[in-house]
Image 1 (cartoon, rainbow, N blue to C red):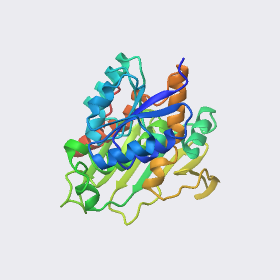
Image 2: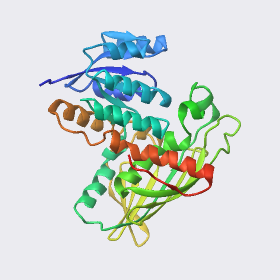
Image 3: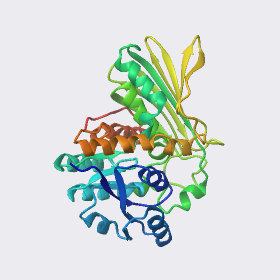
Length: 343
């Protein structure tokens, strides 16, 4: 049995810093190859990580036989083809969210993972925030009772250059959406992870302040119904003046809790009281949501691979968040309820 995984990383953009910093401090991981189409970024990554090989072509990295796991940190539209190719080459795969830009591609990834004797995981690190873990433990202990309703508010700030200077954001073909698939998807994951399966959704998306710069939505509101009858509401926007802390409220029969990143508040008589601080985030909003719990997910994934255990955030577990994103977009186009299909 191996005691270390040899790692290849495809995509050395902003989020790669989080992955490399985690991996370089793990005893059971060694970065042996990096890949990026930008030569300056590629060389900087090779020097930082000490990787043996640096590739401009991602297919060359996947062909390197001694790589055990590939981290896919590229633009959204590349997650599915790169992950599928790596799985077919016998590699484990960890991809950033979203797992794909379409439900069809996500299903192909699940099929490829089922056929491979390896693991496909998707980064949903907020499941490991202290606040999320605490609520999940209370749920599983039967302390909370039935979920009655849930609400989520994601109010962040994005200017046109964020999209226009990226080369891929802001277009349906390459990003697969806007605020839903990029900023809100972590919260959509928690709505399913903590609330249970969602049965149907009625949503509306619009492109407002950024309508002259992007194709995709910068605003969304939606209502949804869980399979157990609970109701939910969602508001997501990239038109706010700052990256405000994300609010997720869960109302159960026996208690009401609010999650603000790592912080957990219990609502009593309409007043939220802090009951768990967790780790203080260095930033409000996006940056804290990038990296606070990446290290926990990556460490758990590697431990599972090395010990032969099934990892909890596999392709099927990650599917509901993307499925909900695409259902809201479809609902808006049809102006009608959309039933969410199973994997």
